[in-house]
Amino acid sequence: MNAARNLREFFGRLRTMLKVDLLRMFATPTVYIMFGISFAIPVLILVMTASVGGMSEGGASAATFTNVWQAIGSASANGGTMSMDITTMCNMDLLFFLIAIFVCLFVGEDFRSGYVKNLFAVRAKKTDYVASKTVALFAAAVGMIALYFVGAMIGGKIAGLSFSAAEAGTSAGGIVACVVCKIFLAPVFISIALTLAAVGKQRVWISVACSLAAGMLLFMTLAIAAPLNAGALNAVMCAAGGAMFAVGLGAVSGVVLNKTNLV
Image: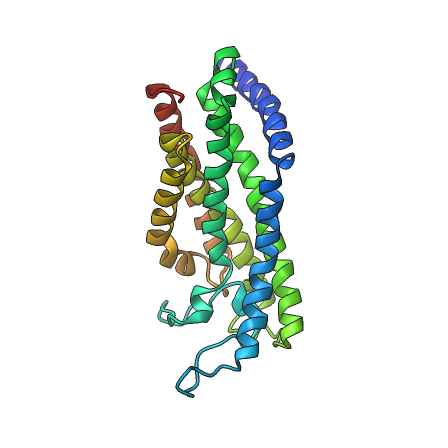
């Protein structure tokens, strides 16, 4: 009975704080700038690489985008390996760095403005704050991924690229699973950046630098965990990984906030 009551109280507090976080997030220009960048990245990548014509400086053939779905992800080969070229490095996985930067900026502003100190002085718990921030930032991450997808479709159309899934080594189901996997992986980067933002507090440059460094270490794992020809197993594994990171690092963030000064 006590556990059920505590759980209801937690979700009640979370709902209230989440409303505030969403209102504050969508009232700032930063989130719309991030949305705009998310939309512009695939358009610029696809149009600019198409205009180069696939030729390097020495006149030799260079790897370039030939299919719009390459901007979403890379299909894994039979052996599970992938070639390392521009089509592998410049796809939707770049968004995770942008998501990490946004997390640091959003949380850092809470510390810089004194919002966090006032919030905790009134009634909020550290765990409620972390949970609310994770959910709100996840909603922003989903929006960024959706806008990237739209931008890729428009950029591919402008560049005259093929929309054939078979040519990209996947299927319609694989593409959907790939995007779903990337959505499920967003909490991994959100929770890492949130923990580092709790450490850096108003020193946003520290949390941004550390978050980008952590992202670099995980970047190659993204192509393996969420390939363009992903399946149901990939989605389940990404969902489990995202949930474990969100819960585990969320607890770490709460400890950091409890053990350090809020300045």
